[in-house]
Length: 289
Image (cartoon, rainbow, N blue to C red; front, side, top):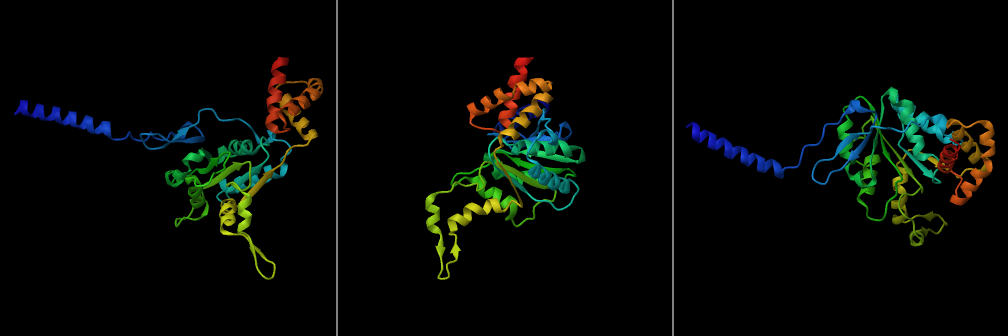
């Protein structure tokens, strides 16, 4: 009996090993205590999971210059959210490099101590938004789902998933989740001249958009708060350069001497943006050091 039992157990262990090789691995446990920012990771041969971000950007709201109205609105909306009061999903659109993504990161740093957490989701993974919401729905923290540089081409699956997550599912949106998204264009689907052909007008001259146009603007309209960012004027750009140079240890005289180089730097890149100002400041301060 002993020999037969040993043989049976050996065969059972071999069978279990073969079954385990076929089954997908279990999702890693979310390490909530590792930080306050996470990324949604999708694996080819296994379930997706939340990965804690080890090194989070330390940018603060005070570092973001000359976007006062946008900063005030998103800060107020986020404060309402972490306080358990009604708040809106937010779409930040406009000129590149003007602080859209940085503003969301700064809000995280501002309110992390109050229980705010951020989950960054790639556009290609937006179809899994319901799984993310279900994962965090019972937690006490407040979660911002962050979609950066968002835009869609015709037929992309993430477009429909985001529409449903914002406002369109039979289930209510979890009260501890908001979606903050950035994009360089207000309407997140491409717009074509042929879309205008779908407009029609009645006998009184009223103009009615066709179904194609309605579909393309419907996603943007599901964000309750729109924040628009504009290119900086020259003086604003130079002020931002001065702020970053000062934060990197440059003196007032060095900042004044950098003015011409900062303008040439922006001219070479064809943009006077906060990103360009930060890049110049690092280059200039690094050379001085």
